[in-house]
Figure 1: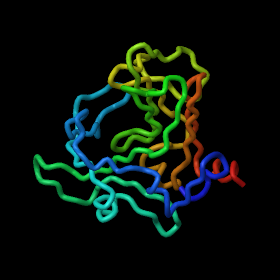
Figure 2: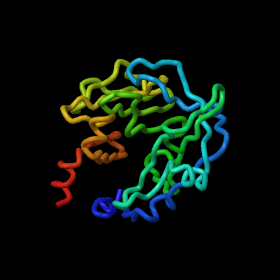
Figure 3: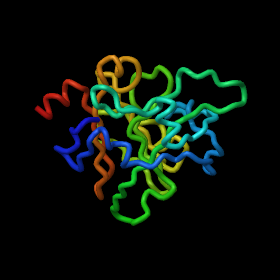
Figure 4: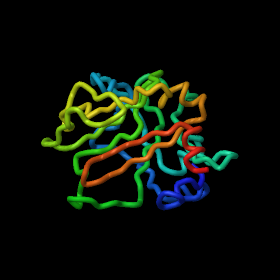
Length: 206
């Protein structure tokens, strides 16, 4: 997350990247402090994990967010702390200070776009759109990914597209390859998400 964005849109330098986000750091009335850490986006499971949404200072001091030596902005899960039974794990939730309007001014009220999402050792990213009732995924869409079983975007899983291309877009293989880059187009024609692995993106920006 260096300065690649400047070639496509609003550029944000790594050292100031986290200045463009607010850290939630408080009780979440929607999830009652429970983040959906364990669920399949194809067949939703009802298990959740208890978390503490931490503020900016706690996130930095706990090394959950940082700028590394290569000037990459890093956000990570806490995979080192021992959390006693019935206590909560510190977790980062950030929200953009920038806002974008398209169509209704308050969209996506009661909704969200999941650009990257998965669980445990999954190797493919699950992209999902969550909305209020009335939004249905178009059958036979021109896409490289595989649609989920549920076309109703108001249901718990949302409208899901799984990236089943040969390159891993999530998990250990994704990490071992050095990551990748996503781009999301939020348009009157629809919501579109693209993924490039590191080699593809290097050629794109050369």
